[in-house]
Structure formats: structure tokens, C-alpha cells
Amino acid sequence: MQIIINQAGKIPVAILKGKMDALTSPDVKNQFLSAINPGLPVFIIDCSLLEYISSAGIRVFYQVAKAMADWQGELIFCSTTEVVSEIFTMVGMHTDFKIFPRLDGALAFVNEKT
Amino acid sequence: MNIIKLIITLTNNLAVILIVAYLLTRTKLYTEIILEKKLTLKNSLLLSIIFGFFAIYADYGAFVYRESLINIRDLGPEIAGLIGGPLVGLAAGLIGGIHRYFYYSGGTQVACSMATVLAGLLGGLVYLFRKAKVPGIWGAVIFAASIEILHYILIYVIGQYESYDPIITIRVGFIPMLLANSIGMGIFMIISRNLVREKESERARQRMEKELDLAREIQASLLPAPLVKQLDRFSINIYSFIRPASSVGGDFYDYYLLDDSRLLILIGDVSDKGIPAALFFSRCKSILGSALKVIREYYHEDPDPAKILELANEELLIANETCMFVTLFIGLLDFEKQEFLFSNAAHTIPFIVSPDGKIHQPEYRKTRPLGIKKESEYASCITMIRPGDKLVLYTDGITEAMNPDGEFFSAQRLLRTITENHGNSPEELVRNLITEVDSFALGQSQYDDIAVVAMSYSLVNE
Picture 1 (cartoon, chains in turn brown, yellow):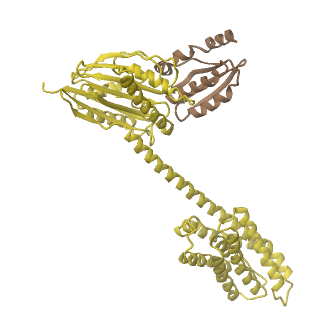
Picture 2 (tube, one colour; picture 1 turned 90 degrees about the vertical axis):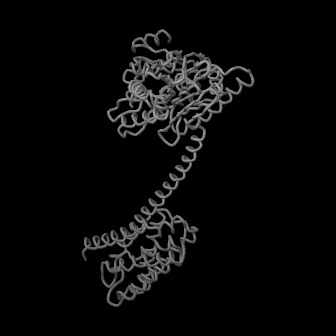
Picture 3 (cartoon, rainbow over the protein chains, first blue to last red; picture 1 turned 45 degrees about the horizontal axis):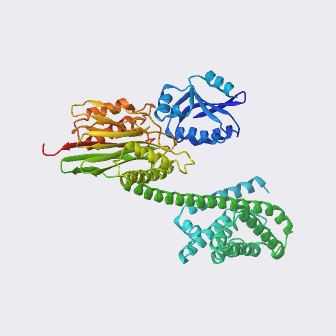
């Protein structure tokens, strides 16, 4: 599991690569939490290279979203593969988060919001 | 004087003694003395003799210079004193000292013998002063260096030299002996410390394993046993299997008869695995129990699966800072009506296989797992389960069991296995499925918890 956090202007974009499961999730969570500062309006998760996600991984997203909710910050997703998209839908994540097919869509949304 | 030869002699000597010392630390004797502080007469005697022997060995390997022996004779008694107390130190010192006295005469004879006895005795005094606590590495090194300083003061003060100036002996021997004894002490203490750490972590591991065993037993006792029961008009057969990836896990199931014609059955999967998941499972288990009780005794209603999920969701959201959640499938089977009313909180949807091998998954509405959001709405759906049909509930540990090539067992393989076993009893079906999953995984260690429940019922007297 690899996490690359890039900056699109002031907005961090985390690219997840590999399998996000009970073993790798705690590390992802720590990296996410250190990438978000209070007041950060949006945090983008790019799932194009995410091969698989388990419930432990899903939990990390809800934990980060909960932390960002303190300042009305938002966690958004883009470029989910078919496997990951299926899991997201299965646990109802599509109703709780904005999921964009591509990164540019996510960035357009960010520009509108900020 | 050949300085290279002196260094080689002392290094060889040190190496041999440290190897023997290393082997000694692996013995029960050493463990008893260091960790259990069991200084019985036998242990004390053995310790004195072994470390006394170290001193004797050092004499034979000494570098002889002008009637003096440059060696690490003091090291053995020093260690004996530090770990075994004054009597053990004195005994080892006497063995070494007496040997030195008769082994080699010369001007330093008395001083060197005395120094070795004192080395053991002073080690013992440190032992008393530190209340039997073995000193740290640097403390022991400084102690060893101090003994060598004392040793050379004795050589200077009480040595008897007729034909030469003792200063030359001191100039040649002091630094090598100081270094060799101190380094030897340092290495010995490192070896000893490693042993202590190893044993301590071993004990911690054993304690943890015992606790985990107990946790596993407790968790197992919270899950129902297979159920084969003859009711007035129906007979019911349920077989279940669970295997957590580690000692305890987050997969669970439950089933019980509400009355003579209704069965409540559920299966769940807590996010994450291991101890956190197991703790959250306990919470789920009691919350589901009270949700059911509230519905029946407070609302006087028939338990509606969606209602149970709603109540449980609300409860689970309280004090859930870590965002743990659970996927849960719950259903109520009415044998009379042959109706199965169920609700699903993002869990894998079960299979229903008929006696002629037709298999399907009931339609349902997708909703969130429990414990994520308050505004989650759960809906109950209905499907038919007829006598002879089999209901197979499972967790994703089955479909996501992985083989060494990284492939999943998949829902397709699960569907095929269930279909192939449609004529078998729930027990045979579950056992065959697990065998199939295990042979697919080819010994690849199980990554996620696995749980399966198979249920069928039939009419009596027909």
C-alpha cells in the first residue's frame, strides 16, 4: 500500500495505490490526518490505483470525514475502479460522499466550492 | 615485548570465556539465578565453580611479562560477585586467587592473588549495595575498570621486586588488562541483558496468548451451537461455522426460535478484525438483543428486521468515536407462511437454494452499515423460503479468501459450491464449502474472518 499526497493548488490530493485493508489502514489514517489542517475545505482521494478496500479501509474514510466535519470540510473521491466502486456502493458510501468519475471533475467541484 | 601477540592472546582468551559465558546464559541455572533470584546452595556452588574456572583458564592463557601474568583472571570472580552476591564472588575469587598463587611465582604473586579475591568480594558488595539488582552495562564496565586500577595499586604497593622496577610492569600491563577486563565485562552484560529481555518478552507473549485464548473462549460462548430441533409441526436444521483470522474476530452470527413457528437469524461483520472488532461485536450482540426485547416487550410488536436495525444503529452511534461499524443481515422466517422477512445493512446478501438446485439471492434495498449515520433508513423486504430450501448466509471472508496468485474465491465459486451441495444437509454443505475455500487458498494464510450459516426446515408428518 502506497499513499502519494500531491497538492492541487491548496487542495491535497491523495493517490492510494494497492490494497487498503486492516493491515495497511492505520498507516493511511495517520497520513490522512496529518495531511488535513483545520479549515481545509476539501480533501480529494484519487482511487484510480486502489486495487481493493476492506471494511477497515472504509472506516478510515468515515473517521477522516468525521474529523473534517468539525469545520464543514469535505472528503471527496474520484476515479474509483469497478471493484472499489462496487464496494463503495455496497456500504452506501455513494450516499455519504461525492464520488467523481475523474480527477478533473473533482477539481472543478473544488474550484466551485472554494 | 610483542604488543601484537599480547593483544591476540588477550582477545583469544576473552573470546573463549565469552563463548562459555554465552552458553551459560542459555542454561536453566542462569535463568534461575538472574530472573528468579533462586540462589540455592547448589546454584551458588555451581556459579562459584564456573566463574572460578574462568579465572583459572585466564591464567593458562595469560601473556607472561617479567614475572607477571597479563590476563583477564579478575573478570570471572567479578561477574560471580555481581550476579551471585559476596559469598559466591568470594568463593570464585578464592578459586582464582589460590590458583594464581600456586601457579606462578614472581614479584606480583601476592598482589595478583589478592586482587582476584577482592574482585569477587567487591562484586558481591556491589550486589548487596544494589539489593541484588544486576548493574547496567556501563556500571559494570566502570566497576571492572576500577578493579583493574585497584589491582595495579596492589601490584605497586605490596609487590616484591628485587631485580627490576615495578613501574615497567605496570606500564606494560595496566592498559591491556584494564581494557580486556572492561570490554569482557561489557560484552557479558550485553549478553545477559539480551537474555533478560528475551525472557521478559517471552513471558509477555505467553501472558497475552493466555488472555487471547480466554477471549476466544468467551467469544465462542457468545455464538450459538448448531441447532437441530424438532418442533410440533416443523423440524429445523441449522449448521454454522466461524473461523477468525486471528484469535478473535469481528464476524458473528446468531439464530434462535422466537416461538414454535418463527426463527430469527442474523449474520454480521464488524469493520476491522482482531481484538477491536471482537470488542465491538460484544457491543453489537447486546444491542441487538435489547433492540429485539424493546420491540417485543415495549412496543408489543412483532419484530420487524428493519426496526431492529434502526434501533441498533441509533445505539451503536452513541460513543462511537472510532467510527467502527458493522454490516448486518437479519431475517425472520415464518415456517407457517414460508415467508422470510429480512433487512440488510450492507452485508453480503445470502443465497437461497431449492431442492432442485435452483439458486438465487433475494432482492433488497441497499443501505448503510450500522454505526455510521443516524439518518440511515432500513427497509424490510420479503421473500419465500419453502420447506427443503436452504438459506446460506456468509461473510465476505469466504468470497474474498485469496489464493497465492491473489485471486478471490469469488461469489461465482461460492454460488457453484452451494449449487453442487444443494442436496446435502446444512452441515455437509458448510463443511464442503469450507473444504473448497481452503483448497482454493492453497495454504495461503487466512486474511479475513470467515463465517457461514446454512439453514433448512421441513414439515413434520407429511
